[in-house]
Length: 120
Image 1 (cartoon, rainbow, N blue to C red):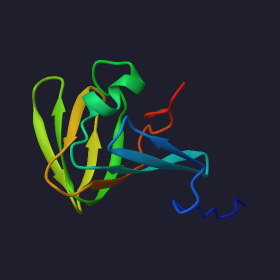
Image 2 (image 1 turned 90 degrees about the vertical axis):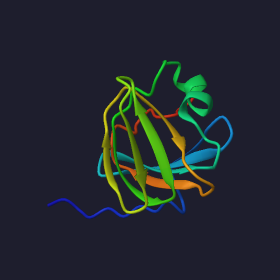
Image 3 (image 1 turned 60 degrees about the horizontal axis):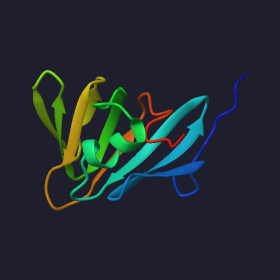
Image 4 (image 1 turned 30 degrees about the vertical axis):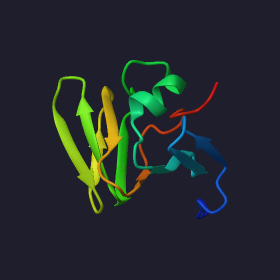
């Protein structure tokens, strides 16, 4: 019988700093990587994470819950969606995103977070 696991973002396994304007606290639990992203006003994937990822757009699939703030997501096909506090989101690979408004966007990400914004 498997044992229950409890982890806390108060003592993450690692903290991944973006190129200014935010960070992701990362924990490993039951073989899964879970991230708590804090994206400060002015954060934009193509400016703050693209230099780390080395791809033209974000190629990570996100499955998350937005705790606070809002973010504008632009898919490579040109479609857009705004996500905000209380939203459960599934964002496929191939997008750019930026904080919308004056408040940080804070989101828990259960998706393919393993290598997101991880420096080589």
